[in-house]
Amino acid sequence: MDSTLDSRLVSQPVEMKNRKRGDDDDDHGSNKAKRRSIALVSYKELPEYMKDNEFILDYYRANWSLKEALFSIFRWHNETLNVWTHLLGFVLFFGLTMANFMKVPQVSNLIIFFVRCFPISGDTNVSHDSRDLFLGTTNVIDLKRITPTPGLDIALPVTPVTLWPLYVFLGGSMFCLLSSSICHLFSCHSHHLNLTLLRIDYTGIATMIITSYFPPIYYIFQCDRQWQLVYLGGITALGLFTIVTLLSPTLSTGKYRAFRALLFSLMGLFGIAPGIHSAIVNWSNPCRNITLAYESAMAIFYLTGAMFYVSRIPEKLKPGWFDLAGHSHQIFHILVVMGALAHYGASLVFLEWRDRHSC
Ligand SMILES: [Zn+2]
Image (cartoon, rainbow, N blue to C red; front, side, top):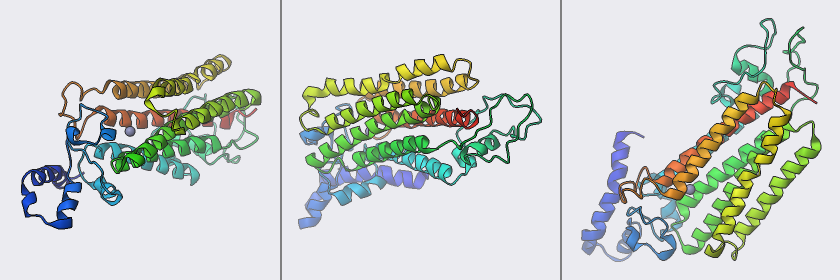
C-alpha cells in the first residue's frame, strides 16, 4: 500500500469522528442520516450484539447497510486488516490451486524451499533441481522422463497418483478464508446477519480442519484402504457433527460454548492417532523428517494463533493502542494462513513420495 493511500485511509475515520462530533448542524435530511450511519463509533456506542472485545476501544462500524459495509473494505476501521489478511490468504490459495490445476510447478512449489527426501544418483534423468523434481509430480507422471536406473532406490509408479485429496484441502482452505473475510466485512450490518455469518465462519474453520486431513491420510495409507476409510470417515463424521452443532440455533448459544470448544479440540486431537500410526509404519521413510518439520511448523503456527485468539494480547495490555492494526485477531489470521501454507508444503511432500512409491 502506498503512503498517500495509507495516509488518506487513516485520515478518514478521524474526519468521520470530527464530523460526527461537531459539524452535523450543517447537514440536512437524508444526507445527515446517511453521514451519521457511516461514521465510526466507539465500543461504548455499540449495540449489545457487537460487543465482543472490550480492549478495542474505537473505529467500529455499527448497523451499516450492505453497500456501505462492502465499500468499507477500502476504508480504515478496526476490521480492515481482519478482512484483508484472510482475503489475501484466499487469493494465495486460489493461485496455488490454479497453479496445480494448470500444472505450473514454478508457482505451485513457490513456497517449498526444501523438498528432496529421496536418494537420487547423479546419472538419473530425474533432475536435481527441486522444481523440476516436482514437475513429475504436478504433471502427474511423465513416464518418458523417468527411466530405471540401476541401484536407484525408487520404485517406478505404475498408476498416476491422484491429486483430488490435495484439491479437497485447497478447497476447504479457500472456503474458510473467504467466509472469514465475508464475516468480518458484513457482520456490522445487523444482529441477524451477524449471527448467520458467525455460523458460516465457524463452519469454514471446521471445513478447513476436516479437509486438512485428506492429503496426508490419503497418501500415507493409500496401500491400506481400510485405514484410509477409518481415519477419513472418522474425521468427516466428527466434522459434520461439529458443523451441524454449530448451525443449530440452540447448540450455538453461549450455554454450549464449552461443548463447541470441545468439538473443535477433538477435531485437532483426532490427528494424534493417524500421526502415531504413520510414524510407526513409515519410520524409515526418507521423507519422515521433512514432513515432520512441515507439520510441526503448522502445529506451532496454529497453537500460537490460538494463544493470541484466546489471550487477546496485545490489546489487553494497552487498550486502544491496537484498534486499527496489530490486535490479536489480526495476528491470529496471519498465523492461520502460515499454518495452512506449512500444511500445503507437507502435502506436496506426501504427494511426491506417493508419486514414486505406488502400492
Ligand atoms: Zn477472524
